[in-house]
Image 1 (cartoon, protein in one colour):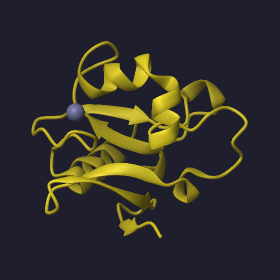
Image 2: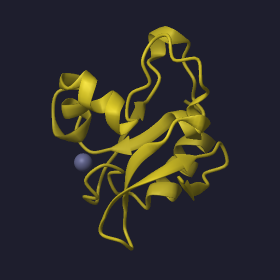
Image 3: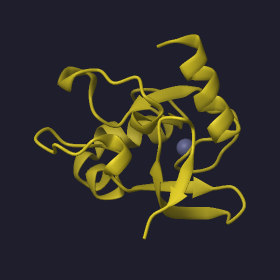
Length: 112
Ligand SMILES: [Zn+2]
């Protein structure tokens, strides 16, 4: 992943996990799996706590169906681009998750 992309991801998340809000997250999660054509775009990335087996990243890995429902995982066969797939994301101001759309410039838009 490009250094710039990783820096933009940290900036968007303020260093906090985009699922649970805990500070110190450092794992870049791909919503659309790498095996389906790796997309290092900000709309396809979430900054998560943990690793492949721990924290929110581990949870996503172990709960594929729930993760699809939340928009954390985009399944094989879903032809939408990640920017068009709503995602449940922790909002620091709200202190809870809300449904948003992510763009490729680090922007976050409330999903209707
Ligand atoms: Zn987390």
